[in-house]
Amino acid sequence: MLIDDNEITNFYHEDLIRDMQIAGEFRIFNTSVSALEYLKSVIDEEAPRPDLILLDIKMPDMDGFDLLHELEDYSNDETELLNFVILTSSTLKRDREMAERFPFLKGFVEKPLTEDKMNTLLENLNTGN
Image (cartoon, rainbow, N blue to C red):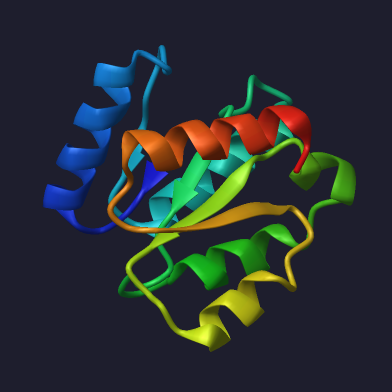
């Protein structure tokens, strides 16, 4: 699952992920609001959850951190099942520090996503790092 308001970035990242053949179903959300609605429905219905959620933090209306704040209302068990990774162009130290306060966040990756970055990310998720 990819949550990013930039269509060009979404196109590039979707193309990369499809070329790597690491995803079956792939969902893209251009707003955090629409992604949050989807995620809440998945959690509430105990439906299959996305294996990986790549989340941009700099978006209009509701940024990525706002989305993560909204999900803090759910139990740790529910959010631990969601593999959130920040995917951002931000190099600000405060954004990394802000990300660290969310225990269910599994990583912080700078754009653009590359095959090497994705392989490292997947390896870390599989080993629990």
